Length: 418
Image (cartoon, rainbow, N blue to C red; front, side, top):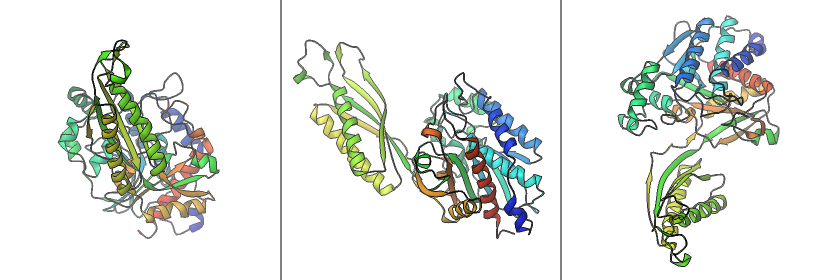
């Protein structure tokens, strides 16, 4: 690291290069309405990954891909350090999603390393700009970062959201396997930082430049099935019906009221529902619904789960139904590192960017990395809070602010490492 503090203070990323890369990447998997569709390890995602590999080579940075398919641009220290500071996000998207979610986080980390190399700065600790595999849950949620921290098991692949043949096909396309994913655990991470778009309106509403995330919510999901009795929709008196949909609908409304009243800022959602037999003239005999709920506190999550299960049983009893429920493995809430948050905030002050701390209601790779190393993340504003949508937008100015903040956060984390 140079000792000229003036040179360090004045260092800035190449704005045009960053924005050009962002727009170029958005053409891979582009949809007609301005979004992107790069579901994990499909042809479009593979093309984006190859694009990133070529960009890394063109920048003169080292390239690596681990057994989970996670890609890294690497700026080596001299000599190469045993531990490394990592930054980044993901290039995959939801179906017909936006061009900023994940992609911006990878590109600002990459641009920060490229800026340091262009300036002839050799960091005292090796830096990596990481693209994590399948953050968006096309196969399983946060898959690449789970592999890095040793949270994956062979049983997880049996619960994949694609069938085994498709799973093997996608892994093969990326040059990985289930076995290589299980061997991708790392023990060399000194710290981690991630930029992400907010996906909400708190920054925009408060006219603040940067949201420093101090905790990421836990996420729990429960598969619920109400069972009643099929009946003729005309001949069966309503008072005598055992309508499974009435039970499910009543639960969804009561859960909404209860969580809003007792667990704010926690949230819950019934995002998928299906009825059988599924005919307009038959009383529903069976209704499946998918329940998800989130909070930043694990004790609050425990109590929320107990309350919601009690409510499921009460709604079933009220309509003379039976109910079964099966919880999937939870995503644990994570508190962020004060050391990394402080580095972000000191860099923001240096760049004269306003900032506030806030909870992340979405899950991110950061919460997995936080289990093995000091980790934190920060948000830049999302216009109107729109995300997972082709209309997703973060202004060019906010993209540049986020990139310069990444550059100076990494420089701050490097201080004292020489």
